Length: 286
Image (cartoon, rainbow, N blue to C red; front, top):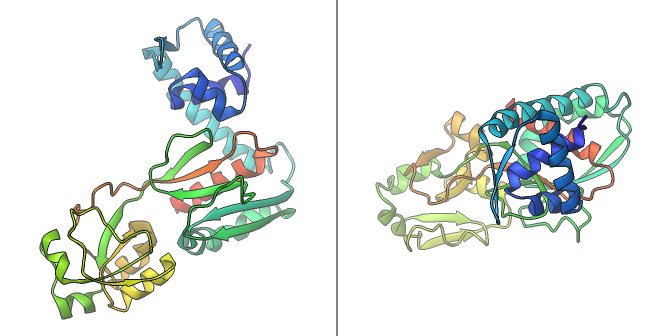
C-alpha cells in the first residue's frame, strides 16, 4: 500500500518534470523518488508517466490521477489546519517575508482567525519590496509576486495577478490620457529603483520620481504625481474607489505576475508553513 508521502512525491514529479528535480524539491534522493513512484504504479496497476532519457510526462491515466490527488492533498491540508494540524494547535515561531501591500491588505485583516486557531504560534513578518534570500535571512517562507524561476525550493501558486499601468484621474485631467505607449515619453511617472525600464521599447516617461517602497508608489500615484506600474491586486481598492484608473490595458509585456509561496524543502517543521500558506490562499480568495 502506498503512503501520503508517495502521493506528494508523485505530484512533485509531475510539477517538476523529472525524478531528479522532484528529489531536490523534497530534499530526498532520486532513488527514493523512483522507489515511491514504482510502488505507486505497482499498486495502481498503471503507468503514470511516459519516460524518456531526459524527461517524464504524465500518461492519460497519470493525468486523471494527478488531478484527483492534487485536490485530495489540498483538502487534507485544509482539514489539518481546521482541526489544529494532527489534532493539536501549532506551536513555535514563524518567519515570513512578503511585499508590504500583501501584508497590509490581505494578511493582517484576517490574521486574528489564524491566531485564534493556533494561539501558541507566533509570527515575525519581514515586509519589504526587495528580494530576500530565505536561507541567508533565516525566513521560513516567502510570499512572492511574479513568475518564479525554477529552483530546489517548494512553491505553490496562491492566486493569479497581473501588472498594470495606472494613474489618478486628477493627473490625467492635467496631462491627458496617453493613447499609445509612444505617448508615454511626454508623461511623468513614479517608479521603484528597479522599475526604471518598463520593457516598452524605450518609451519611458522622461520625468521620473523614484520612491523606495510599493506603498509610497501607490500613495504618490493616488496624489496625481504620475503614471505607475502596479500589481492589480495591490491597487484593487483604489481602482474600485476611482482613485486610480487603468491606462493602456494590455500594453505591458510579461504582465502576468502570479502570487506564490516559497519554502525550503528541508524545513524541519513544515506543518506551520503549510498551515500559513493555506491561510494566505484563503485570504486571497476573500
